[in-house]
Length: 220
Ligand code: C5P
Picture: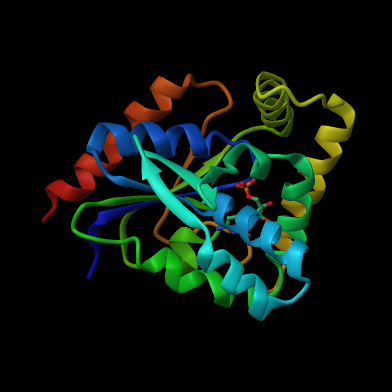
């Protein structure tokens, strides 16, 4: 039985998942699950403990809040969301996300966010593993150069100095690792719809996905 209260958006880094998920959550007044941010937060905790049991406890002590359709992470009331967006955290998240312990420690937290309120879940395995019953599943892709350029602008706007060539290499390596890992690899669910955002504005992507969602929910 499909759950029309859940929309999943999976795809490689910087394909536009984050902006799309945020815009959809706002439009439909759904909660946003930014699962990449959870993997980043877990890595932040693991760096402090070097141990999965302790990392899970540290993670559960963080405050993870949805404010204005965005996810924020607080540690002892301090907003650490922008610290978690750092490329170094992304690298360790990418390594740790290949481990069963990490994924097991995060799965129930993610599933618990589903409710009648509605959920837009953004990640790599949202449609395949975490919410296989989601009513609408999108696999968002974009050309590698477009993605690197987007991520470059994002990091530059956040005040982080980055080198474009290093960024292209990092994104490629992380995508390859996400696709090749044994547990929850990055891949489209059988019942997902692929959308290529390379030549589309964020508004055009939003409109396409809203149309798909409305068609799916009309069948009820
Ligand atoms: O999406 P974001 O770049 O914030 O994700 C950080 C890392 O977390 C990714 O490179 C990926 O390895 C991992 N991740 C994952 N499964 C998810 C979301 C993110 O493995 N559902």
